[in-house]
Amino acid sequence: MLKLMLLEDSRLVRPRLLAELSLVEGVTVVASAESIAECDVLIKELVPDVLVMDLSLPDGDAAASIARWRLQLPTATILVHTNDVSEATRSRCLKAGAMGYFDKSADLAPLLMAVADCAAAL
Image (tube, rainbow, N blue to C red; front, side, top):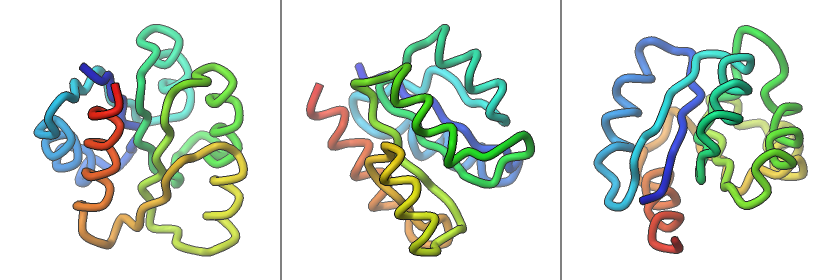
């Protein structure tokens, strides 16, 4: 089973996203975090295979955290799910090590398919 962790601070988005992600075959959602600090702790404890993350977080620069998390989780897949669809931010995240970048206002299907692809690859 693929271990997935969600980093999302929105109390409106998180439950729906957790429900959808937990339905992906071969995936176990092991945790959800609301902040970068909480994510740091949970990554060390749980070593997820996939991190699905928002960028707009209350405690720092999530895009900058991607590079740090890539070092901690060299084989994990980091997927960004955000409202920030600017090319500059997208490019910055992908250069830091994110492997996918998804528009939060769009259909969830592409994000769920990327997670399913990760699970199938295990």
